[in-house]
Length: 537
Ligand code: FAD
Ligand code: SIN
Image 1 (cartoon, helix red, strand yellow):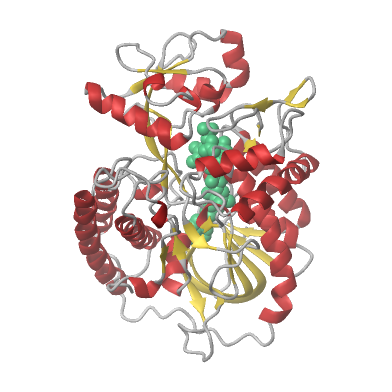
Image 2 (cartoon, helix red, strand yellow):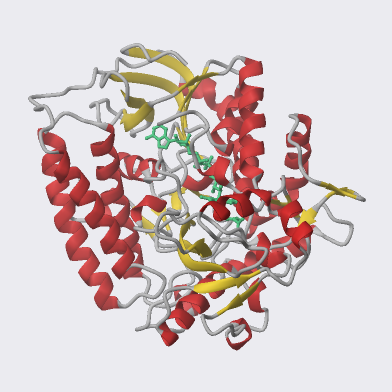
């Protein structure tokens, strides 16, 4: 837990301590020195808030082909079949691995109790009540402690160090990262044989999101600035059901509630989903979120309602104790009243492009978990496939990284210390707070569930102006965690807008009124690299 020295070298530098980063660390331990960094407390990240569970073929009525097919259907033509196949086929072994680490999944009469979520043709979600992520994160951290894996908290990676940036010849490769201590404000240089991005998503780029505060897209922004390819950022997933309550910070109401029979109603009490899709409440997530959005707008309501009151109280308390207790604090008792819900930003389907072993296009750099774009999710992620992806690709990347360590080490090139230049002490926190709010509001208003080319152009102008202002501030003042995050949020916002502008069709999560149909000629990933944006820096 102790702070970082000003400079150090490790074999494996892992940025992020969620399901992906910790899986990688556990698999690679024993092949070299491992350092895991987390931006805040070590358990803080999306993983520990995951509710529904982990999708995998575990039931006697299930088959790999069905899980593959459900994933491909949700992904709306953009999944990489190979990525889907390996994820699905390696899933059951990963669940057994978690069991071996002591994860307490719920059990039924014939093995694990499996719940159901939208887009799944079978019950296949292994879960620990309605707080699966908390149990998984607990077990992974305990396993890391038992293996003596070093985890340093409050250590904010600011930027990747690449051979290109420090002026070494040859093709650029990742050499580690500059890391800011939240406690001391000091910046360390950590060089590494292999650098792994496991930094999670970027929900904070939107005003309303289920993401915890660490979800500011740092990994995508750092990788993009370092020259790695980024793809499919237009596909930001909105979860259909965030709690609608001014103080609730978009608390998630798990899809598992619909899986167990929850009914979506409008403010007049009418069950409306049949009007939008024959699969009703269990249609894929993009469809349910858009249907709720359309229904709310059609009627001029503030929210929709998820009705669980027809289910026995004992069943609800047994299956959803965490959600029940949390929303009760906000005055909502789901056993007797419908839950007010609205769609909120939830998951980044795009990210840093990787191959099937987690390698990015920048040698020496791996990306795993939500920060990556492996091809599993395509244009829309199937529910509960992301913890699974973190587990599968955490292991795959570890196997490849351990193998490649011998090619990537050799004498460590000298890494220059962080150069603060003439940076001044930050004087106007309000500038950061104001720009932070403006980026998120712009994205919410102009780059949400339903888009138009005109709104995207407006967003582009605004985000571009904000980036200019933020860049000036960034180079003038000393770096703080808030400033690091703001800069990253603005870069990620720009990547989402630019990817969205380039896709002139509607597909999966990207729905544009100007191009409402899917155009098979555009069935390809939207890939962005540094040179694609004229104002990139
Ligand atoms: P995270 O768990 O988000 O961890 C990111 C880590 O990166 C953190 O340790 C953070 O501190 C660190 N980090 C970030 N930036 C930096 C930096 N600059 N420097 C150093 N460290 C950094 N998926 C499912 O499959 N099933 C579910 O039931 C489910 N429920 C969900 C419920 C909620 C409320 C949310 C928000 C998501 C849910 N998801 C679910 C999605 C899933 O939880 C995430 O996609 C997954 O946990 C991401 O894991 P990760 O390891 O990639 O990142
Ligand atoms: C949920 O419990 O609804 C979240 C599942 C997911 O995001 O995969």
